[in-house]
Structure formats: C-alpha cells, structure tokens
Length: 199
Ligand code: GAR
Image 1: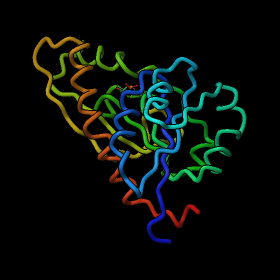
Image 2: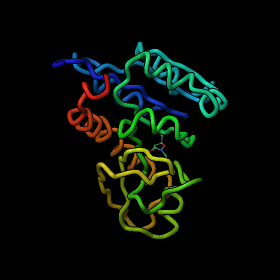
Image 3: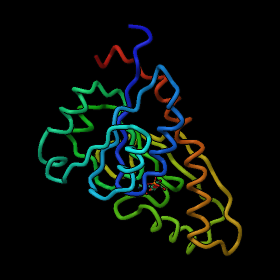
Image 4: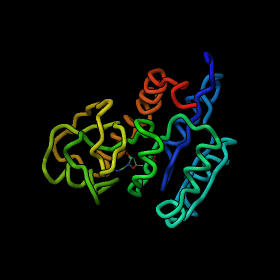
C-alpha cells in the first residue's frame, strides 16, 4: 500500500516544546499526521500546546498506562505507526514495547550512554554534565526498550560547552539542538518504516 499516511503519537510529561516543534515541522505534510499528544500530567503545558496547534490532547493516569491496555488499544485504533517520546518521564511498560517493536523513539538531552538511566532527566542531566566539567554534550535519539535510555541509538548530535557554562545555559543550548534535529531524525525514522508490516 503506497502513499499511506504515517501516523505519529507524541508522549510528553512537561513543557512540550519538542512536541510543538514536531507538530509544526509536519504541519503541511500530506504523508505524515500527528494524531495526538498524550500526557500523564493533567497540567502539562504539552497538552495546551497541542490544543493550540489543533492536535488532539489526551491525558491519562499512571494506572491506565501501567496496568491496563487502554492506551495501547487507543493507539492501535488510531493506527499509530510511530510513538515519539518528547520529555516523557515514565518508564514505558513491556506491553508497549511488545505492541510497538522498534516503533517507539525517545530523545535524551546528553550523549548516551553517559548521563542516562533512572533519575537522569532534564536539568539533572545538565547539572551532572556541568559538575563533571565536560567540554562536550549533546542529544541522543534512540529506540525505546525495557530499560531507561538503553535502546538502540539512532542518532547523536554533539554540542560544545565553554568553560564554566552553567547548567541552565547548557540546558538551553541542548534544547535548541533538540528542536532543530528531533523532527528531522523522526522524519528519517519514518522514511525507514515499512507501514504495510504494521497494518
Ligand atoms: C528535553 O530536554 C528532553 O530531552 C528531556 O526533557 C526535556 C523536555 O523538554 N528528556 C529527558 O530528560 C528524558 N530522559 P520539552 O518538554 O520542552 O520538550
């Protein structure tokens, strides 16, 4: 089946600035549709950003996510081809990884395997990078498996840290790199997806 629209679901827990960049990037594309933004946090800015962009926003609770198949069934009903985690902070349960093998991608604000794992997210990462006096950091986009930040790496982009740069400054530099590259990398992942295999 050629020319099938590829459907993305974004999962975000916080601000959702990456989610918004992804929505805007694909806005005029006939071959890609952002079906919905999902969040485990009721007040997540990500849900508001989705609403503002005319994308369906869906809030769920931890029990629904971890202990039922409700969300997986919803994603299957929507014929989602790719799940994009963008600042999503819950560990994805086995049921998801099995239902969407190599169909879940995540972005991490450091060069994995450095600064990955449980508790390493957002500013915790940039603080650790700054405290270690690293001269380079960056972003990692990877497939999601059963462990935090351990799935196969798809792409990494580096960015240089100048001496004595604060964690806040590093965070804003890295976020800019994410905004620029995450949509492009997702586009590339979609190009490699065989949609028929997943019908
Ligand atoms: C991003 O920097 C993303 O890499 C990070 O959370 C931020 C979300 O920003 N994710 C992690 O740390 C996951 N381990 P956003 O909500 O503005 O897109």
